[in-house]
Image 1 (cartoon, one colour):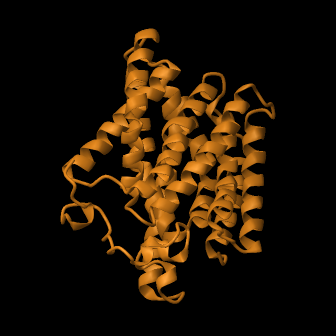
Image 2 (image 1 turned 180 degrees about the vertical axis):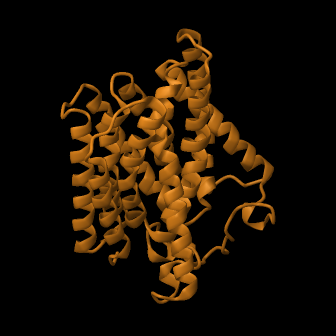
Length: 336
């Protein structure tokens, strides 16, 4: 890769990089980390800021839609691939897409001070969450696995408060807790109220994913969101390529339409493109508010589970959906 900044390349998707000594050299998580046009640069209600926030909300919502297909697509992928092969292959394919973009746009390597944060993103969303949820889905239904997503928004907000000192209002926390409770009650009832051995994998996935989301959202305020996940994927190649070779040699592959479609979606949609818009949205509207949009994710996942996997929903689905939408609206309008 040539040592040329993507910010100076007119064909790249990037933000301009200020000179040394500019506000972005301040400690990570400070208000000066926010990109130009963020709420810290202009009074609330400023038209350009409101437009940027609406775009950020839309981008985060598109990420949620992409993520909502992850569990059904993983279930499809497991029809053709073993769990370890599926995790490794999806990461390698996503890294190939990301690396191709980085090479084509001649993006320079990230600064050394960002490497620790990228390592957290890689461990959380590139390796940890896919591996743990795939193992869980070997014995759990997608509706039961949606429990982990029901708690993810609240956990991400907690991580952002601890990591970055963000202090949302009491109204925000009340709505976030209510939304999490509604989603948990629905998904647990949907799965019959029983907790399985897979729950250990799911709750571990919850923790590592929230950490990866928080660190990725912080980095997306300093560098373009697509580069955050792109570098995290590329840096994992020394682990994922050998893992893919070994797993494919030990786990038999059954070539079928569901298996291929599943692995392609979790690689392209869930692990790269979905995270691109997700991190851009978090950088624009803030990690706590963006995270609460994921309250809708379990319900979307259950809808896909019905349409794609033939699973069944209860009559409580529309009531839960309405309650969640109210909670999302409150978190988006609350002071953060």
